[in-house]
Amino acid sequence: MRDFRRSLFLAVLGIFLGAITLLFSFEKAVAQEKVLKIGQLGVMSGPAASWGLVNKYCIQAAAEMFNEEGGVEIDGEKYKIEFVSIDDKMDPKLAVSGMERLVYQEKIKYIIGPNVDTTAASVVPVIEAAGAINIAYAFSKALYSPPHSNSILGMIASYQAGPVIYKYLKENKGVKSISFIARNDSDPLNQRDEGVEAAKKLGLNIISSTDTYEPGTTDFFPVMSKVVKGNPDLIVLSGVAPADAPLLIKAARELGYKGLLSTETAQDIKILNEVAGKYAEGFISVGGASTPEIQSDYMKKFVERYKKVAGEWNDEAGTKVYALQMIIYTLQKAGKAALTDVEAFKKAIPEVKVRNPFLKEERILKYVGTAYFGQPRQIGVPMIVNEVRNGKFETLFIGSVED
Image 1 (cartoon, helix red, strand yellow):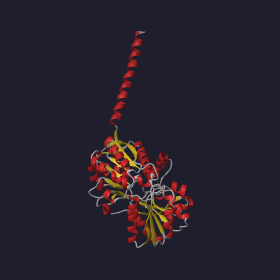
Image 2 (spheres, helix red, strand yellow; image 1 turned 60 degrees about the vertical axis):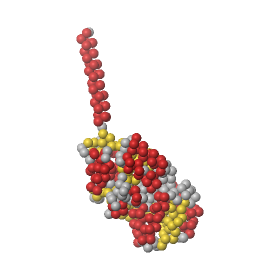
Image 3 (cartoon, helix red, strand yellow; image 1 turned 90 degrees about the vertical axis):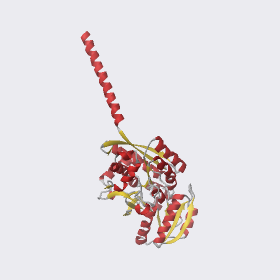
Image 4 (cartoon, helix red, strand yellow; image 1 turned 135 degrees about the vertical axis):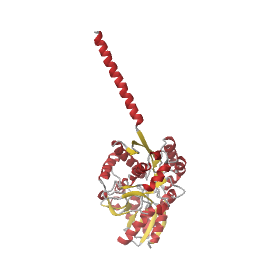
């Protein structure tokens, strides 16, 4: 009986010590797991909410895919991706406080966003003081030009897409005259001014360019009636938010306008269909950088993961998927020193030249923008221009931004 008790005691002790060892091993493994923390700051409520939400869903979907493969490798070590997301509500003050939280409290060096000029400009002093990098979706050239060097443009700018779109419509659709309408806000007004300059260089007849509407407008008939009255071949909705675009389109069509409508900002086909319906037919916009016909197998996997995360696909995600991928490629080129020192990251930017993982055809992905900003501070995403056909985005043509 004594031997049995002794054996039982030793067995229980062995199990207990084994469990303790296993627990310590697990805690050690968790403690040793390296993390790459990414921030996301953008507008995720209000008329432009889809712009920031697409950023968020892209990071989440891509991070899940990377983490399932064990993380991303930098200098031979694997890092799991974590991200912190903050809604700036398109308010510069909230953008500043959000960025301060990301860089100072969360200790994050790489941030995706904000989405418009006013918020992107407001955070520049914060990221420069904190030694951080952000990939923004604002078009002001000053953000990406010397003496500033910590912001990177994550998409095609309006002043890059506009001339290409107008030239295509002039040569292929017979457009000779053009009018512009913009929200009375710095970002769309800047896009309008850039568009006007591009139209002048192409020799287009500018019918009107001073008509504006206030943020929060829901009745666009008064302002659109002025634009439609001039009967231009093309009406450009400069810097238009996804929630405003269908209302403007519907107003123009119900006022009897038969010409073309376009914008250089990305749009949401679901909102266009729900609000504008049949009136959205023929609407032209800059689309995501990966249409179904050019998608690689990897991109197709990302699309399916994005749908699981967001509930549905958004064409703009084809562009915004590039941000996290390029951060990773640049960190891999720069080495782990860049995890804490963005100067090492910036030094590696000109050296990043990889096969584009999202395209079926072999194409080099790199940083561009020197011709516009005096330094390579733009991700070289493909320029896809869409047209709404039968309630879907269809590719009108494919271009690019090259130096």
